[in-house]
Structures are given as structure tokens and as C-alpha cells.
Length: 272
Ligand code: UP6
Image (cartoon, rainbow, N blue to C red; front, side, top):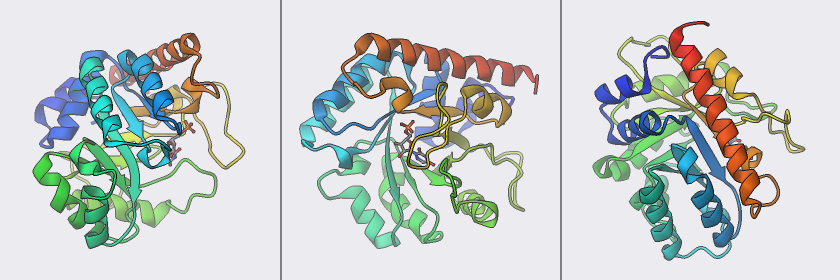
């Protein structure tokens, strides 16, 4: 799938959340997702309103927001409509099917009711997909499996990654792709040419190689052109340490949007 355009892939994808993301990428000419990892509702909404025009997707960690209220979700949805972006709660579910179905549908956050896409660690095996799918599939949601991680020393490699991909292949109505560092075509034994998994990739930065806690960054060119990933996820590279510096957030968002799109155009041209 890595030489096909986002628009062509959108036309044939069977999952509504995957279609929405592919169509949004094509419409906005942006394969940039911003990860809004701040703890105040005000900063959260301000950053999203500022980066909204430049991104296809906003990735959230709602459990870090200190003054979370259901109203925040209403405002997030209003910004999603205003700026035309998809919502991805980066919940990283990792428990038994029954527990994750409750964590996904209930509690304070009620993730399934507002997040188009969420993700899960494959570590419990296929039952985690069954649990999440029982809630999300009827709502038209999509799931990403964490097949790899960006961190130094990650255990999600080799046979673990392969097993994650095979689990996804068995559940293509709900599993729309992976959090990974590279395209997964051909990984595992049961790869087919019909499958189309979206690859969303965190650990992207243009100015630094990592942080002090094991994060590792690669450039949009390495991620999209050389490794065939579909969406770059950028957090601190865009809003840095000060979420109130609007001009700098705008210029960083534009810079990553252009870099990601340029790398994609090169990729579909078939240079590499
Ligand atoms: N994330 C990673 N690496 C992974 C999976 N998820 O960094 O393998 C998430 C983090 C954070 C974001 O939870 O929200 O992506 C990266 O943020 P950063 O760009 O500020 O490092």
C-alpha cells in the first residue's frame, strides 16, 4: 500500500474510522498528528485550536488532564468539527477483554463515545481485541495495535511484533493499523496484498534525537519516506515547553506538516 495515495486507499477501506482518517489526510494535505500532552484543560484546548488547521489528527492522553470535565470533550469535538481533524485517545489498553471493554466504554472518560481511534498493547492476546471491539465496532471506531515502540530498549520487537501483526490480520474489521516505526507489509506468514494497515508513528522530531527518559526521535523523512509510515505523531517538537507561544506553535506545526507531506510525495513517486 505504500505507493498508493491516501485518497485511493480511503475509497476502498472497510473501516469507517480508517476511511475518515485517510480522507482527512488527503483533504488537508497533512499526515501530521499532534500529541497534546499537557495537564491543563486551557492549554489543551488552546494548543488544539492553534494547530488544528495543520493536522489530520489530534492525539490525546485525557487521563493526564487535572481539571478534566465532560465539557472538555464537548469542546474537543467542537474543535474537531471546526478544524476537520480525527480524534485518537492514546489509551494503550493492556488488560483482559472484560476489563478493557469497561475502561473503553465507562468511567469518567467514556473514551468510546468520542474517540474515533484508540490503541492497545497486544500483550494479552486476541481477547483484548474482542473486548474492545464489542464496544467500538458498533460505533464505527478503529483500533491500532502497538506493534513497536519508539523507546530505547523496547521489548516490542521480532516475534512479538510479528504476532501483533497476525492478530490484526484476524480482526481487520476493527484493527485498522499499528503504532510502529515502519510499514508492516510482509511481516509474519499470512501477509496478503489486500490488507491495508495504517502506520501511525510517534518518536518524530527535527531538532533533537531524544529526551532524558528513553524517547528516541527520527525525522519525517526517515519515518515516511524511508520506513513507509503513514502518519507522523509529534508532541513536544511542536509546542515545546511553553504552550502559550502561539507564533512558535504555528510555525512548528507548518514545518512538520510540510516535511511530512514532502516525504509522502517522494514516497508515492517511487524514488525509494
Ligand atoms: N508514544 C511514544 N512512543 C510510542 C508510543 N506512544 O512516544 O512508542 C506517545 C507518547 C507521547 C507521544 O505517549 O504522547 O507519543 C510522543 O510525544 P513527544 O513527541 O513529545 O515525544
